[in-house]
Length: 241
Image (tube, rainbow, N blue to C red; front, side, top):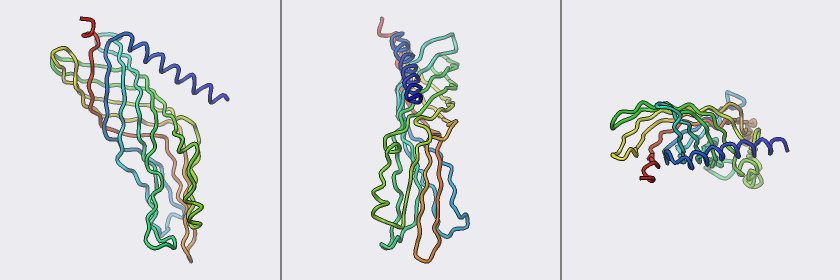
């Protein structure tokens, strides 16, 4: 019950600031691009001949941001985005069925919210920005209620995904450049890194072959990622003219 109340508070907090900034009619941004996520990974025993390995697919994220002017150089920023995280282990096959490689679930859609402050250096046609933020990411239903159907089909393989925290707190840092249009709208290109502060979920995968000892693979995620984004910023003050 306490975690649900905390989650409701955080969501309400971000929605309040997001609504405030939209009503202020200053600037809105839409962005997206490719991402790479991170997972801590360990095979036990470490000298196993079965070459399990983490499988990190190139994924993506996209979102919407709202910015309110604080001073000549600073803006208050709220962001709501969908981050697609990759977390899986590649297991070489032949579980009694011939050649087979099992990856399991690889992509999870993670709603992410952030609140930050952006520092801008603007010229006539170009601008540069640096933005630290604090945010949190919600775990999807696939992790809260994982599908274990494959475990029932193949007795030589088992995977368990465990929720540690329903959401992950993190620190974000992004930097980028802007190219202004005549009416002060702008195109932007940047890079973003989100570093999780707590483990959100853990994965334990075990596999065995006839005549060989069982191999365990442990993975954990803090929902951290790095990504490149392109976007467009809309100066909503033009709507008043």
